[in-house]
Image (cartoon, rainbow, N blue to C red):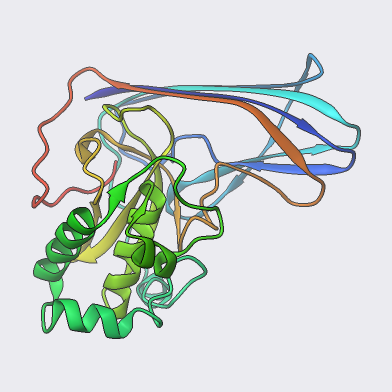
Length: 267
């Protein structure tokens, strides 16, 4: 399968701003073809961002801007084939079962046990996916950037990251390691960056998407972490920015059929 993805960002900054961007496809070994280009300009002058390696093949690109600037970022990639699964890290199986900022599994432990009883493993993962999908409404703009899984459960609505956070929290509450992945998702409508959950079952990390908005087999990982605090596509480390424009594209030469109960791992 060949996938062509891209993102274009425009933003302005105040003096002394450091920017971190997570928009590049995760570069794990195994792809047959991997071509990409990243172009960044500040007030029309081309810059060379630093690339920092993150876990799970993810890469962050950083900029340090001493003066106020109008920044344009253009990223494109063409990828063919699938990446190899990363080796399982036992420390991650501990880290990803703990509560985190947006996946408060400790607060949802009673709810998870009351809802899913003695279910475990793959049966639990499928039950959580189905429950979140059927009990939440996807409503664009309905959640705040500070809302976590508890708020999502109370309001019963949200966007992709809210669906993923709730699924992750419910799984962690029953000791299933779970994490959030930011992805490019061919077939997604409306097109944007997409967030899904990954759960460790059957000896591998498998992706679950309670929104059901795109086929999982065509998704491309950008980065992954405990929750969206680790995977934001654009953030500052000092200073401030204002996002002016964002457009995302993701296409596949053929979209696979989607079986929500099937096991799928991210490329």
